[in-house]
Length: 353
Ligand code: KG4
Ligand code: ZN
View 1 (cartoon, rainbow, N blue to C red):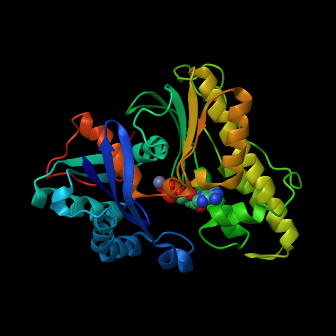
View 2 (cartoon, rainbow, N blue to C red; view 1 turned 30 degrees about the vertical axis):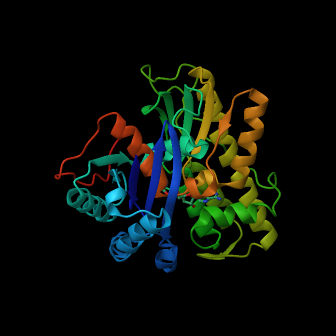
View 3 (cartoon, rainbow, N blue to C red; view 1 turned 60 degrees about the vertical axis):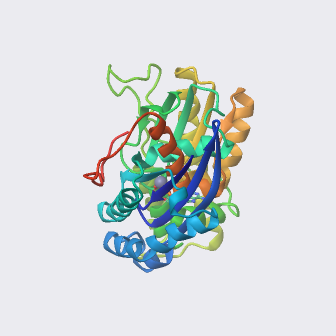
């Protein structure tokens, strides 16, 4: 079967066709239009501008997905769409469009959780619905989320850790902003960090312990916190500030701060991921979401997985950041589990997984 995936939860308009045959998943198209240039001058995503841009782009993007897959409307067997979480105005564009397509084609409408999409990008990367040894512990790390899930069987996700404050991608974006590096911050800090000394700046790694007696973890807590780290970077920068918003840092000092910040973020993420893997007897680990595009995280995950004898999975860059192919993949899981939405489907900006 062929499923059309639609993703508009934040600032990427995306549509994809994923084909399934005997458990194999093939990406026939995955078209993404990023709104980075629309939001850059504001230093972050402006919700109203985002929804307006989705409206402008969605028709052409879906048409592009059909054309690239060399199919037409009647060849679409089901429509999957991100229902949440995300920006409500942005989500509504995708949900309304998907409803219209499904209704006019008389095809099933399948709602998808955005984070389930990120987790399924790990399977999609391998090209098979059953390609990863389970149970797997998956870290979903993006601009809005930093969460750990245990996947015991296909499509069954149990959250065992989350951030108490900032998401890791959000911390990257904020640190980039306070260093005057521009937007979006993650890829820039990643690049600049490559020129710095990772031990130059002493920054704290936050470890949360003993949450409560009912916590799913036994040995230590699996939650994250990144706001203290961001504040530590701010304090370090303020020491050398000449005026509010202006720093007298040299390029080398900025690179050192980026490298030190990145060292702490990456080691925190990996420590927690591998702790969780041990606690839950995982047979594999995976990292998905926008921050999984990070070069150091990718390198260190591979090394750590090898050292600990655990298969470690990470999607290619085009499946790491927001895209509709992952929504189509999660849509296939939901479709086979019998999940269907009615014509009253609504966007849910705080949908839980
Ligand atoms: O998954 P995603 O595309 O959108 C959300 O669902 O949030 O993730 C976007 C986040 C942003 O915070 C961005 O700065 C971060 O992923 N990001 C990175 C890198 N590329 C994107 N963070 C660190 N290193 C990167 N190379
Ligand atoms: Zn995302």
